[in-house]
Every structure is written in C-alpha cells, then in structure tokens.
Image (cartoon, rainbow over all chains, first blue to last red; front, side, top):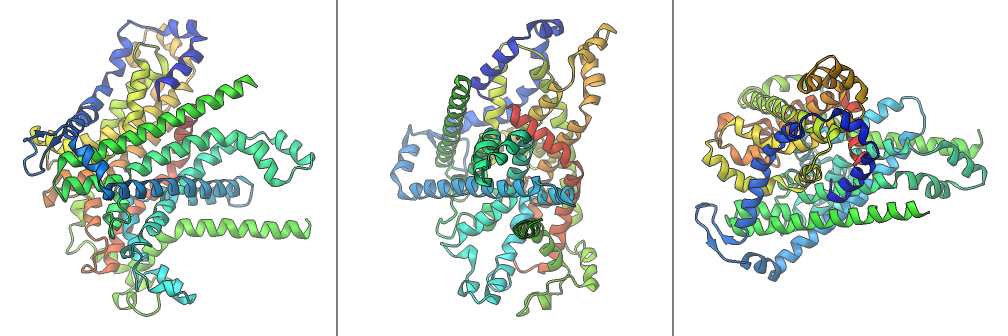
Length: 316
Length: 277
C-alpha cells in the first residue's frame, strides 16, 4: 500500500470514529501489536540498505568485507555499456509480454469459465494447476518438453511437417525468449484468470441484459458493461505481474541461465551473474538498484493512473 | 437453439477443453515420461500413454539418490516457514485492521515495498549477515529468510479477513473481561480459520518451492532441499530421465493436490486483499 492509498483509506475510515474509539486500548497497544513487522527490518530493510551501500563500492565476492568506495562508478559503467542496454531491452520485452499475454489468456479463460456449464467447478480448479506447480519442477518438465530431438514440442512440430521441429529452443538465440515466455505464461495465467473471474462476479446482470435488449453486440456489451467493472482488478493484476516478472529468477536461471548470448538475460539474472559468476558485488548491487527503481517507478505510475481514474469517476 | 447457437456452443466447449488440456498437459507429460522405459524415451516416436509395468520407477527413485533427505529438509523448511510467518503476521494483521495509529501508512507501505525486492538481490547481503550470525548452512537460516518474504503477503491476507469480522463480537468478549490478546487468539482467529488455513498453505509452499536461498545459503549436501536437488537434474541427461521425472512429480503433486483443496480460500483471501488494496 502506498501513502496515497493509505490516505484514501484513512479518509474513508475517518467517517466512523466512534466505532474505533470504543476499541482503543492504551496508546501503545497498536505499536505493540504491529511490532513483529520489525522482523522485516532485520531480514529485508537492513540487507536492502547494505545493497544500496554496496552499489557505491567495489567489492569482490571473495572478500566481501573489503570495500573500496567508488562513488557512482558502478552506475556509470552500467549506463555506458551496450550489454546493459540489451539487458534492459530483454527485461522490458519479457515483462510486457508476460503482462499482456497472461492477462489476455487469463481474460479469455475467465470469460469461458464464467458462463455456466456442467463440470464448471472442476474446470475452474483444473485451470489453477499450473499456478500451484513449483517453479523448479516447471523448469524441469518444460526443459524436457523443449528438448531438440526428444521433446514433445519438436516431435509434434515434426509430425506436422514443420522445419522448426529440429531446433533446440533453449540454445537458439531467437527461440529461447519465446520458450521462456511460453513457460512463464503457462505458470502465471491461472492467477490472472482467477482474479478476473472474481472481478466478473461484480458485473451487473441487469445492465448486461439491458444492453443486450438495446441491441448491443457481444463486443459492445463487453466494452460498456463488463470492462468498466473489471478494469480496476485488471490494472492491479498488471501491476503485480509486472513486479513479479521483474523479480522472476528460478524459471529463467534453471532453463537458460540468461543465455544463449544474453537472449534471456533479464535484470535479475544479470544481477545474479555479476554477483556469483563474475564475483563483482558492487556491480551486482547497482544492477539490483536499477531494477528496484524501475519497479518503484512502475508502481508510482500505476497509483497516479488509478487515482486519476477514481477522481474522474467521482466528478461524473 | 438456433444453428448458429449450437455452433457457438460447440466452439466454446472446444475452447474450454483446449484450455484445460494446456493447463494439465505438462504434469501429465511428467507422469508419462516417468512411466516410459529409457529405451522408448529416445525412440523415433513418442509414447503418449504411461506403461503400467514401469511403476517400479517410483520405488527406484529412492535408491541411489538423496530424495528422502531432500524431502525431509524441504518439509522442515516449509513447516518452519509456516509456523514462524503465521506467528509473526497475526498481530500486525489485527492491528492494521482494527487500530488507527500514527505510522500506519508507513507500515502498509513497508509491507508493499517488500513485494518488489527480488530474492536474488537480497541473497548477497543475507549471505554476509548469516555468516556473522552463524546461520549459513542451517535450515533455521532458510526458515528465517523465507519468512521475511511470506510475512507481508500473509499479513495482508489476514488483514482482509479480519476486516470482515464484525466488531460487535469483539466488544461482547471485551465486556466479559477478555484481554485484547485473548480476543485475538480466542475470538478473532477461529472466525478467520479458513483464511488462516489459506495463509498457512501459501507459507508452506513458499518454503517448499523456494530455490535461490536454499541454493546459495546451504552448501552442506545433507541439508539440501528438494528444490535444489531437483534443480541439479534440469537439462542434465546422466540420471535416467524417467527417474528424474518421477522425483519431479513426487515433489510437485503434494503442492498441486494440497492447493486444489484450499484454493477456494486462497482465492478469496488474495482477491479480497487485492480488491480492497
């Protein structure tokens, strides 16, 4: 939650002061109750601060206690190298594709599973299976399915007479990213579909019927009635999928380690490579800070947009 | 029904079947591969159905590998992560739902920020911190590191559930002389039990699935978790593929089955949390 959102909620809750006041214990009770989150300061806040400091030093993995302060050199190095521009490009493609494709597929799945049919409950449960599968196992089975000679993908392609049936997906610079995307989308689209399905329950049946009686076709009903209701949930989904895509490590690392020749090298993979392959903790920290800044920036833009949308709705 | 209607209906059914097939196929394929003899795995044409006589692979998987040790370690980490993160999340969730206090927005903001921190970034400083605290190469260390990532999500989900508990029930208990602590444990928690179960499942599987910390913070072979053990097989062909897939399926199925049982509550909790923001 951002301060903006907290403020909105504070305003909403301020309308009922009598209610909460009755429950108020001592002044310090709330702080006592919330104290366990200090745990996060130790295991997230402090390491984050250390990363920030590291990003301004030259530090080797082999002697992590010895730092040489280098100012903004790590950042300057990143800005100056085309390799890093490529990392940013791959990250952008991967993230945007994850958001668009998983929400698109999730929306289609949700619309299909929203209409009544026999066995709907079972179908709804089945669709969530990929989301429950551990990423390491997903990497394992997809790597096998994508195997050049014996993988089922290529066997199917060959059976259909495609020349692509001889390619080793994960070793081919132009096929590795699509392969990683197929795997990722398979794993995450159920989450999108579940959230959208929940949002679809809020669509007014009367409005939908009224629109149909007015002679609206399916697409216009969707645009006029369904979309406005589910839009806030879809926006929030987009935010979460963006943040998760910027963070995703196991799937990509296990399937390609960022290769071949950097074709799947996202920010987080680059960070890990710099830290544990090149043993340069300062550079790695700088990459991490760039990634974190992007995530924060995206979040800020998101809350700006939703806040503006809420305001224009209020003015109507 | 009109002809066009039937046609559309058929198309819809086909789309739903296609969707379900795509969702379930990789796990089915894992199963088929585990039940296919090596000689047939590399044959020109693939076996599309499991060979029942190959069931022995599920027993053989335990010989010559450390599967038993891995699974025990993963279970310890998962249970520990669940207990610790629930214990840490209950009271902050209650406070965020019921109290108004200065700094509340900051706590909420802090919880949200944690969603953006990649494990891959924090693993470097955590490695150093754990070195100082003698937590490297311990399952306790993994539990502590994992919980830092589950506590924010769980706090959020529990807060959403507690929001739905009528405050009058608490007031009644208060008039009866219960302390605030008693109310949380004795009155509120039982009322949000389904969400609590969902939160427990989320924490459990975070611990069960977690890879990068287990890979980086543990070097002792005897303390390897199943995720790290299994990761060692990815893209490697010296261990028989069908054995690897059998291990992979045994690692995956508990997660999937468990999830199917509680998914109703997980979905309710997650959507409540995300819709209310």
